Amino acid sequence: MGDKKFYSLPELPYAYNALEPYISEAQLRLHHDKHHAAYVNSANAILERLDKARQAGSDIDIKATLKELSFQAGGHVLHSLFWSNLFPASKTSKEPDGVLANALKNEFGSFERFKKEFSAAAAGTEGSGWAALAWCGLTQRPIIMQVEKHNVNVYPMFRILMVLDVWEHAYYLDYKNERPKFVEAFWNIVNWKEVSQRLEAITK
Ligand SMILES: [Fe+2]
Image (cartoon, rainbow, N blue to C red; front, side):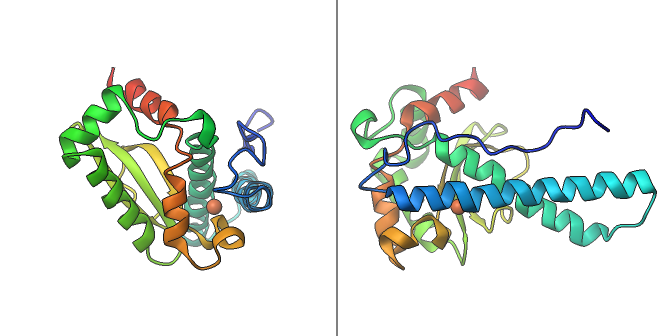
């Protein structure tokens, strides 16, 4: 049991103030150091609980435990993807190019149309959740997911290329309850190079 792995909180690939003015340092610190860390710790606590129960041969509430693990692990994975698909505005482009740009144009007609649909998905996610751009390997199409919480409406086997966190904890310090303003700001700090590489890695 000693060699079992657990989740760990990744460091941000940029400074805490690097996404300003679109995401403030205070907002980013709170989001990464407190909220994301909490998902990591909670997911690990569940894994430990499962390990212990299995060792002891004791019963567990399987339904509640698996539901909770899906939520906490989903939160960890989505936040990890989120940090690395963001980048300082001065060092990133406003649009993708290459394979990703072509895939979006083929599916949505134009980059602007994709942006509009993704923004609407993000603004309209019910309660707490995410908008995600994913790739369907069966049809070779990009698809937008509107993820509720961290784990509802996720398609099995569809690889996620880009996510936008629209939980209030992601934007409340900077934008209060104005989620659409945060969604608009997001487009300035997308790491298109990373998103493109995620697509290239699964389609080559
Ligand atoms: Fe979050």
